[in-house]
Amino acid sequence: MNNMNNALTANPHYSDKQYLHGYAPDGLNNGLVNDQVLHLDDIKRQRNRLRLERTRTDIFNPGSWLGRELASIEDILEKRKHLQAELQRHKIFVATAIDGFWRIDANGVIEEVNEAYAQMSGYTMEELIGMHISQLETNEQTEDVQAHLEKIILQGHDRFETRHRRKDGKIIDLEASTTYLHENKEIFVFFRNITQRKVAEQTLRAITAAFDQACNQLRCACSITPAKPANSPIALSQLLTKIR
Image (spheres, rainbow, N blue to C red):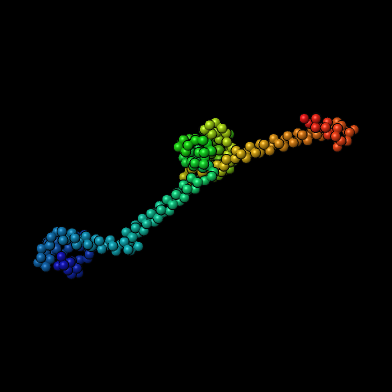
């Protein structure tokens, strides 16, 4: 083997590239080097050695085609690793969010939902995936839903109040915040349950209306009893009787 190596490197008329592609001295092509018989396996091993040396050189040479390919692969793997980390953070954020979450396509079909919205609606996450939002929406008809989706896509975002029907038939009030992702043609929606706030607001309006009505009745009662002092026991008793 040493004789073969010497024979390959001693002849100045042939380069490693020529040997690599099978261009060897006549003696080598005939299987003879320095009057010794070489086996075909020896020639193959020598060519493989040259290929390996070339490959090792290319790997550590950023300017070579192989170096560039390896750098490109490393860059792709790094980006993939980064995207996987981002996806994991997204899943953790959505899963632990207090607000409800939807990821829907441009046609209004639910592709992803979190546990918070599932609890709001009474459906399971598996039941919600694949549903059209018109099956839950109560404020808008199907055609209105589609028009609203087109508005969100055009604007890129929207914020509004709406109402959804739970699985048990009850209605819940929600505040929705939406963002359209042009790259994926998807809409992210976050929901906040404002049902209790709406009930409190309705109660406050009822109390305010009752108070205003009582004040109006009190003014009317005062206007029909001018002869008696307003602070006398009889006058106050009559006013209270009229209000009741």
